[in-house]
Structure formats: structure tokens, C-alpha cells
Amino acid sequence: DVVVEAPQPVPQAPATTVKVSSRDRLIFPESTVTKGDLADYYATVAGIMLPWSGRRPISLVRCPQGRGKKCFFQKHDAGSFGDHVHQVPIVEKDGSTENYLWVDAADGLVACVQMGTIEFHGWGSTVDHLEQPDRLVFDLDPDEGLDFGDTKNAAEHLKNQLAELGLTSFPMLSGGKGVHVVVPLTPQAEWPAVKSFADRFARALAQAEPDRFVATMSKAKRTGRIFIDWLRNQRGATAIMPYAARARAGAPVAAPVSWTELRDIDTAARWHVTDAAELIDRATSRALAGWGVADQILPDL
Ligand code: ATP
Ligand code: MN
Ligand code: MN
Image 1 (cartoon, rainbow, N blue to C red):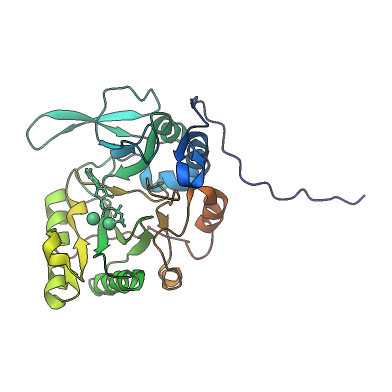
Image 2 (image 1 turned 60 degrees about the vertical axis):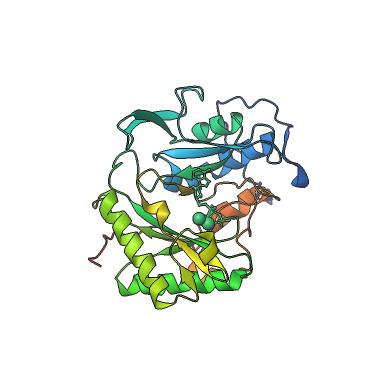
């Protein structure tokens, strides 16, 4: 008997126990992506997203009526997201304690979508080692006039400078305009030391090439330059998580890429929430093998 192989099914969203209401609500009106589509996207990519986004304090960009309507950034909550969204009490600078959110399963991601979440931003440390970051992120923010090629060259430059310090780094498309250069760390040094390293590293690059880079937030100084936003690397700061959707036109997502792939990519919004199957294929591809993994600590700078 001839066995006919079934065509490869498109990965189905794994069953989640979280009920999503108003599945037909348009969250990205210009690309017909609904709340149900977004919930299915996160359920589908949970397996490749959670290794980077799970078990760390998250901040959410919630747009309950869709991305064109009112959106807000949410850091704390006292339980309205349900049992799948966990809380960790964190003492703030002013001595007060706030409950931050974290997730560790598809159900948690979907529970956040049920509450109107589009974007997931995360700390550079996990709930297991809150005071000891497990990653540095250099967020490259090009001035309006620059093109993506400039941003890619800047990312490559950071990669080389980091390599000179013995640090392995990985690029991620933000899904917006820029590229994030991610440096995995073995959780050991605490926030003040990590922040200080990021500050001094970014300032050294800007001093060496002041026409190309700035390391201060001031918009005025950014004209024609790339802002090396090192401020993601302080306690309480967040950056967009790998595979998180962005509340921008066309429903783009933040996507890890290899340094080789980056050379041939011409936009930071290369993949979208409609590309879950491709993203999963990519995540297990040779190009992305080992992405984001390196057992390393910061050198003295
Ligand atoms: P792009 O590539 O377009 O710059 P991005 O994600 O890097 O995309 P940025 O504007 O550079 O966007 O923001 C950097 C980070 O600052 C965000 O990823 C987020 O974690 C944090 N952030 C953004 N908005 C807020 C906010 N309202 N409150 C606190 N933190 C924010
Ligand atoms: Mn940015
Ligand atoms: Mn920024």
C-alpha cells in the first residue's frame, strides 16, 4: 500500500485554557489582525518566546480597543490578569513595594492578550536573580534621516567592539525602526555595575565617533546620528522581548536574527504576527542555533 503523507500542517495554536473574548475585534485595522489572531500568534510562538521572555518582570503595552486607539504602558497589577499572570513584589527606589508581572507559559501570554496587551517588554533580569542581570541590551535608535543600512553598520560596530572585550552578542530586529544588540550574561554582577559598564561602553563609542553616535538621550544632539540607548540596562528599565508584537502598522514583531542574516535584511519590521510558522521554523534553523546564549561575565572596562 502506498502511504500518502499528509501535507505539513500549519502549526496550530496550542490549546490554552484562557478564554479570549471579542476574538473578532480588529486590533490592527490596517492589516485585519484581530484579537483572536493575536492570541493565537502568542500561543503559537510561546515555545520560542518564553525562553527569552518568561520568568522576568514584564511591562505591557495595552491597547484594549486596538492599536489606533488609546494605548498605555502597564508595569504593575494586583491580580486582575488572573492566575496565569504571576506577581513578584519588588522594592522600588523610593522604598515602596510594587507587584510586577511575569509569565512562564502560553496561558500567561494569552491572558495578557485577553486584557488588551499587544507588546511585552521585559527586564534584563529574571525573577530568580532580580538583582543580577542575565542580559545587556544596546538599543540602537537612528535619527529620522538615517536608513536601515546605517543602523546595521552601527550594530556590526557594536558587535566588533564587544568582541574585543571578549563578549559575544546577538542582533534582534525591534519590529520598529532599530536593532537591539543583546549580550547574554551569567547572572553575577549587580545592576549598578552592569549599568555603569553599559554607560561607559556607549560613551566610549560616541567619543570615538561623535559624528556617528550619541550616548545621551537628548534629541537635539541626535541629528544625523544613532543614539546608543544604553539606558535599557538599569534596574527597572525594559526592552521589547524577542517575538513580541509591536503596536505599529502591519503588526510587526521583534525578531532575533543572526549577524550573517542581518546583512541581507532591509527593515526592522521584517516579520509580522502572520508569520508564526516561519518564525518557528527559523528558531530551529542553523542560522539561529545558539542565538542569545553565551556563558560570560562583563570584563573590567
Ligand atoms: P524602535 O526600534 O522603533 O526604537 P524600540 O522597542 O527600541 O523600537 P524605543 O522607543 O527605542 O523602542 O524604546 C526602548 C524601550 O523603552 C522600549 O522597548 C520599552 O521597553 C521602553 N519604553 C517605551 N515606552 C515606554 C514607556 N511609556 N514607559 C516606560 N518604558 C518605555
Ligand atoms: Mn529603539
Ligand atoms: Mn530607545
